[in-house]
Every structure is written in C-alpha cells, then in structure tokens.
Length: 169
Image 1 (cartoon, rainbow, N blue to C red):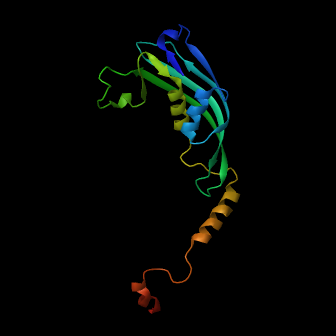
Image 2 (spheres, rainbow, N blue to C red):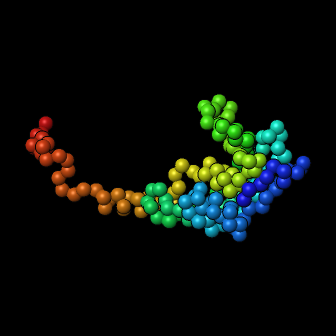
Image 3 (cartoon, rainbow, N blue to C red):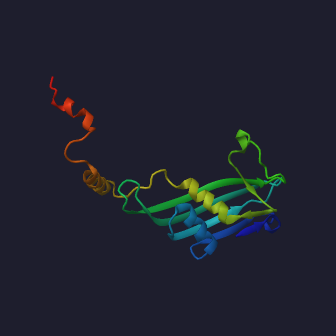
C-alpha cells in the first residue's frame, strides 16, 4: 500500500492494520518468514515536515515459528511499537556513505511511502534474536533428547591419536 505525501493531511493520517489487509499480511509474513494467525493495530503518519515523514507503528501479531533451540513449532507473540523516520531518496539514488545521524532513517521514492515496507521493517526490528518455546523447561528436555541422539557412540576422535588413549598418568 502506497501513501502519497499529498494524501497526508495537516493532522497526519492513520492507517488501520488487520489480518484482512492483504498488503499488511504479506509484509508481516515476509518479516516473520511465517504466516501470522493474528494481526491488528495501526500506522500513524505525521504530516511531512521539510520532506521528512515521522511514522509510528503500533501493531500486535501472532505467528507460529520454529524454535531456534528444539526445532519444534512455537508461538511468537509480538508487540511492535516503533517510531521511524523517512526522507526522500535523492535523484542520484543516494548512493553515498551515510552519516551516523542518518543510520536510523528510511527512504521514500516519488513522493510516496510504501506502508508494506514500513510495516515489514518495524516487525523485523522487533523480532527477538532467538525465537524459543514459551515452555522453557519442556524445550530444554526436547533439546537434550535431540542432542543425545546426535552424540557419537564408540571411539571418539581421530584414529591417529588412538595410542594416546592407553597412556595413563
């Protein structure tokens, strides 16, 4: 979904986000690498000031992902609260080194803001570094069992060092 700068009034613009919005569902699915089972919230766009656009994302979503520890399906509940800043991309494509104050700035093109990209970015920034099961103790048991199956049996190590096993102190 694209929003043109001309369609943002003096009071700004609010865009509702739900699972019935195909663009929002696709954006969140891409960020999570999983289809969300629930999605609700809103995106608030402040009136542009000197061609800068402040965007606030307040969305909740739930999806089934794979646990990074045991590999089993796990429920990921996210509360996305993000404030993002966008500026116009220059005619030269802004292919230049960014200053440190520009590292938290996104870009819009042709006087329009792609809300799907905004939503996907906000969700991606909120995903925890490790997605794990909510039942940590049961996850630990599953992980231990999985690792036990992977442990080698019999002689371990390179055969060239076999003679060293017989040396005792």
